[in-house]
Length: 339
Picture 1 (tube, rainbow, N blue to C red):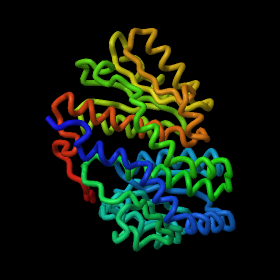
Picture 2: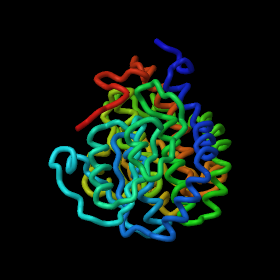
Picture 3: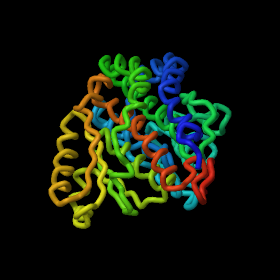
């Protein structure tokens, strides 16, 4: 069995702070320019296009835009373009495409369809030579560097920071932008928190819920995906509100629940659900930003980025403890070229 510190996943996840620092340094001027453009000509609607971990970053972006800008954000279904070859109605939408490789055919088909319809295309992409980077009106390279583990970590963290920076410049939110400047150092600290006893939380159960709400919902989605990828667990992500509409019926004695609670009002909902589950005898572990991460983050919107940075090493350790290789999940490859 590999030692935890020797896995590619562990090494790459530890690089989240540096990736964010590199992203902010490389893209500052372009982010300012894009922010001015969006304020001068606001789009009527914002659309995201992504798969997997990148789509979870898109969920985070959705909450940022709808809370801080006030515009609706929809997620494009790539098969509409790649399979149905459907026409996109003309308009001036903003399309944000998020990808590590920038090479998935269905993502590229969606971008091409929106571009032809008159949308402004912004890309958060790690491969600056990719077709996605070339199709974008504004390319924001993630600058995460090579990522060899199949499980994406530092590129996801950079995508979250990129989404926050884009919206911060668009909204001219000085508090958010100032907090972003301090984020790389905060990520270095968060990496070593070890907030969960993952083997203790999960026991021998093959199932669990991961819950969040608002800014932390995309992090819950990502946490559940990583547990599926690296440990073969049936982990399902829910909003702390949505989990009450049916799924909570299966939560009982010993059922594992992991929660991510921000320090803002959304965190109250997560804490409430966690307390109710604990009252039923569920094995609940909660990462509550109010316990210290809030001060380190400096802004509620950035707390989830520190949460996932703290979570990745725990996922890596759990995978190894269960006899898996987190760098090479079964049946998966680094670039998934869906059509």
